[in-house]
Length: 125
Image (cartoon, rainbow, N blue to C red; front, side, top):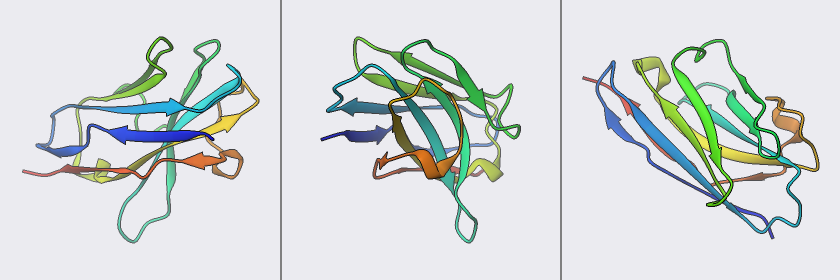
């Protein structure tokens, strides 16, 4: 059974940085994509970034390009989201999710099968 556990959220001032981690377990294949999504109060959930674990191909939402970097450490079954130059509008619950059986890095939420419990990121002075 696939399990995803996020960590690393917290309170940070505008302009600051945070690194989120997503530890994944229970896979029987190396062919899958891990995505990061976020949902702010009163807003729809949106895609942030994703990475194909097998070949490292990535994708980003326009709103985070140049500020966020996604990476993976396959020896630790962990995907990271480094978030720099944070803005108040980045405040949200961040979730990682997995699309199994593909190496196509995309942010289509409908395709992601399993989700973590989320970690809160608050950007405020």
